[in-house]
Image (spheres, rainbow, N blue to C red):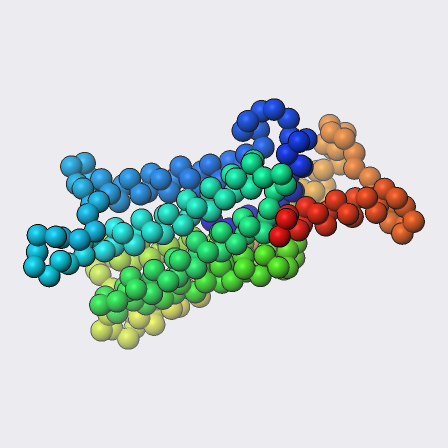
Length: 266
């Protein structure tokens, strides 16, 4: 969700060929499919359950029903919207609008932070702490995506977004372990200062471990490109450096096309 590296912009629609789904990214389709599955699960799983009602009209107070399920459905819906925007931008617009895609994805992550803020109300200390720590990388991913709407193609932002995305994912798994399946068999105690302190300590470990993982992947890729790419370079077309003379007409034409692609109609 929002942690991928830079992607090449798609060519204009008239140059994409006639295959209907050829230029539609897998990412957008996967977003829609997984979130739709999640929504169905929240509404109808386990079999026989029906959580489609928002209000209990039979009760005198007319209380709302299934608060957590509807929070999850709302979260899934915004990520589904992000997937739909990806598909529309990359398939049905004359030119791909990358800024619109970034904005839709940022909105989905902001919604996660907002929903988490209400999700932890009236919860135990342990559950509040792990969700607060989860909100930190989620907000930073949303913030980076927002910045990229106006300042795209910044490698520093790519690294920060990827790092926070890894932390977000690993801490989500840690959250499930802490709340539901602690390895020791003993639940974490909210009234224990040691337990609460170690939650934050473990989160710091996640920050460090994910930074090491990112550095390791970067290092391995760099080594592969440096030592192995020469052996496979002959299998495909060789790329040449673009001439940089200001008088070169081809360079000017390419720069104009790049500006049009980046603007994307915004």
